Length: 186
Image 1 (cartoon, rainbow, N blue to C red):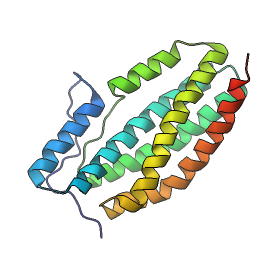
Image 2 (cartoon, rainbow, N blue to C red):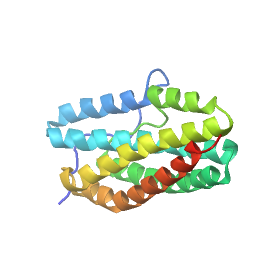
Image 3 (cartoon, rainbow, N blue to C red):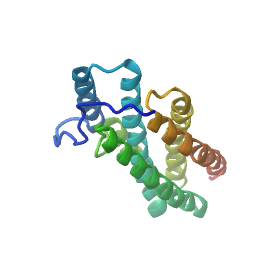
């Protein structure tokens, strides 16, 4: 049975100052403290924020790959990433709204910095940079989904993690293959 987190709101801070990820985590922590919920419920909220943050970054990296990658394989992979992560983002946002949790509406400062670093590259260097960052975030996603499908306090979050774990794992495997080919580029 799913346990809803009472007294939590789904709206974002609306603040453009500071980091969107930090703001979402802070809002959730404040509301969770007021609601007197368990540490596992806090972990559920942190998972949703991190998964959203990664998905937002992956969408942007996918778009970058579509627009500027030097190889068709990286461009095609970027297209698949955007499609898959937009679906995941929709599911995360729907679930967070139902649980009255706050999610970041935009990239956090760390994600912005990582994206900027990759986006300034060109050619094969861009392909390698995009794929390396996608591998990093997708590995984080796969690990988190694997953990949360068994360990989440909330049954709905366990269900979401179980539903998306295998597709994310498959995409991670595909990313590893594409990244391997980019390493061979001159």
